[in-house]
Image 1 (cartoon, rainbow, N blue to C red):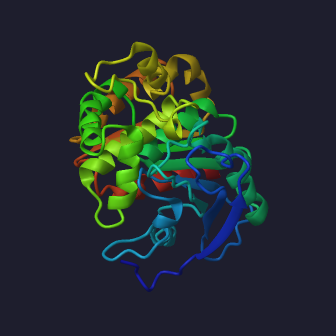
Image 2: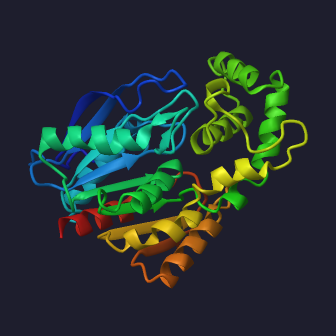
Length: 337
């Protein structure tokens, strides 16, 4: 809950008509909203820019909404800055929600070119409007799918981003998805037996009541449309397993594994040495097994001599916004140096 005695920053809203997202196979609108937080007493000029990459089922403006018994991200930043824990920063909240419930923020013929959207459209629009960020002063952060995106963007684009914070990000795909494909096939079978019939059922029934089991299956279909899209399939979605026996299709699964941050290290690790800061954390009992991937990443980065901060905290994958009290000051400090 917001502390009323703390000076509040201002929240602005921009809109971008994206060429990168236009033409996606999901039919999602390329007209995108970006909320932008500017701290109290500043107009944005010369400040570092942080970009909030939210997790699956959310969108950037969801982090600027009113919260009942907690702080939204602008209120958290207000408090941290007021208490002297965090240097002033502009924070951008781009809306990257999709028909399939979320985004991994990479380019996909099915989902859209979300990597390009962030770097070529969203960030430039914010930096031009507020005079913030720029080379050496841009960072990204996020949880879950957003944590994954922060790690992947740091790997792929250390020339663009100068710092990243990954909260409970997807890594270690073998452990993550080991049981998910069978579950997804069962949900598809319950709703007509095809990906198309499942999506049609989801888009009808979720208006009345969201099924957690179906939402989890939808997430796996979103991953499929991200990591191994098929331009000839319905909405570009194909699974890396056979639909009847759930046997792994090696060439399809190999395309997924190319996007596992642990696998990407072999080609892209050296670029991480150019970052001003890299922060990774995870709950010690994360229910998606992500703590094991995080530990593997920590070990692999240390073996390569890549500076980073790694922390584990007592908790699961859920209700971990409090970890931003650690990551946001860290990012603001390294980008202000």
